[in-house]
View (cartoon, rainbow, N blue to C red):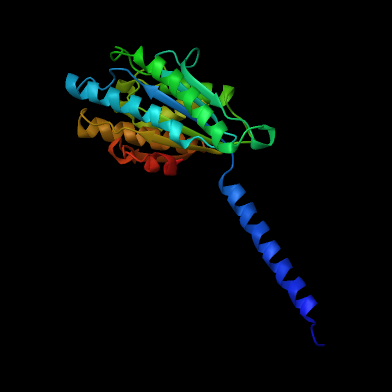
Length: 258
């Protein structure tokens, strides 16, 4: 059957329309709104690191927290906490941002994003200025993870957790002497039996900051502990990212990791 020019044009139009819709759908999926939680450890847990390097580490953590503003996109919810020695009960909120969804905006997307970035910057800059030195305690990382799972688990958003810490915990849950004597496997089993692990299914966890300056054996022990902890918690865990890898001036590396 011979096709008329009108039918051919209709077919081409429908093909283009379907292609555009598929492309738009894929782009929308790639830009799904996110719940981004950053926990920052400003403790002196890496006591073997000299004072100068401790100060450098503190400044790098502040810089990365501030750079998170460049990664904000429509629909995002962002929370930044200071991980304390009592994080399960009261982690300190450094800033939070709820950008909202474009369907509820009356201004342009760019203006709303810019406004969210300015508000985010003002609050985080002010709170980070109050942190002038490292606190003399071990961070309650496991308590913080329980808090995140119980208080910030939004099923509708893509969930990302960024931890800026060497990961050296010495608490009621994870005691270093026990960890050293029995190994990470026993610690994980004990945690499961006593109170269970937080179910971090659906969470992408990025740990930034290696356990440098504490000795090779101890470093490997803690790195293995967190690998097994997050595996047992069903998290999508990414370890081994250094501050240097995320310090590019264009911020692209940090945002791509998210």
